[in-house]
Amino acid sequence: ELERANLAASTNPLLDQPLSSIEGLSSLLVSQLESVEGNQYDTARKVLQAPLEQLAEVPGINLEIAAKLQEQIMKGITT
Image (tube, rainbow, N blue to C red; front, side, top):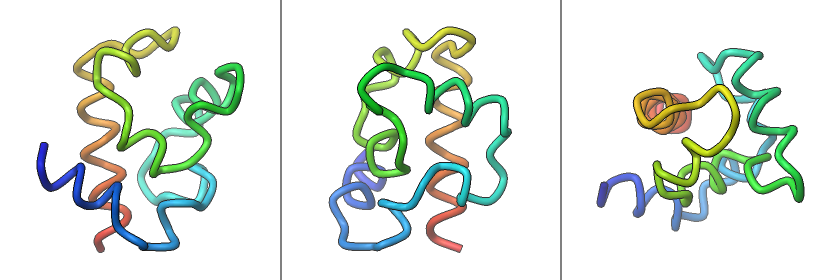
C-alpha cells in the first residue's frame, strides 16, 4: 500500500501516459477504465491513487481485478 502511494506521488513521467502504454495490461480492461465518465482512470497515476473499492465500481472490475491491475501497473512502471 505504501509502495503504491509512493509511486503514485512520484514524478515518474510514465505515470501520466495513457494506460494503453503500460505493458501487460489487457486492452479490454484499459477500455473499461478509459470509458469511465470524466476520464477518472485514463492514466496509471489516477489508477494507483484510486482506492480498490472505487476501482471495483467500474463495470467488469471487482476488488481482486482492481488489486491485480494496480500490481501490474506498478510492475510496468518500475521495470
